[in-house]
Length: 294
Image (cartoon, helix red, strand yellow):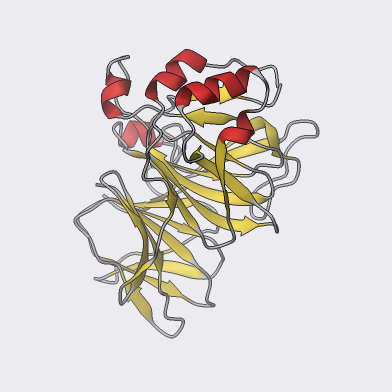
């Protein structure tokens, strides 16, 4: 199967942005966009023989959902179940995720788990009193950071950043606290799967010759490619499904045999099915992220 580009889907959110960064189109007035879904099953293939076909029609069991998040207000405090907990309610999988911070204003931060010594029942009481944030561990973030969030971690994303999210393909979300906004909460189900001890936090990059490994877990690995502006960077792991997202213009993909060459459009997902060898060419610098499926 040849590599293909997916057209993103734009999701309106009350906490979203009224202006989107290039290359995305601007939202309608009064309809803020909070999420740009890059690998949703409903995303269509942009060009080639399969143009117009959805990802779900081509690959019904796609394992990962990638999004760009654009919060202009605080996201809700939420938690996701793990695989076993999700399967008990007839969902295929839980939701472990990570956030690559593309842009961040000064003072940007995320909530990751409870403060030391705080119990889940303490959070319940704080939610009832409208002071849930007092119990959360806040972590400052800056552009280039990678935040890992394992299932069971109570978490929230603050405003003033642009985030590239990689997650297990699951939409099981329990909203615990929403700053008084009139949306449904899932307090009992959410607290039941919440953990006080998690592996969530800022990760430490690991350098390799052709890429920097930002995070690795059983569900995905996220790399920043080291691009040679005077040559090409060979992509390893040809036995795995790979997703490339160019954060800047100026990069292209070439097959090892030379019979395939395609532009890597900024802000869109390019899916490389397993089984072929490719290289990335950076004509004018820029950054390309790679996500490996298990």
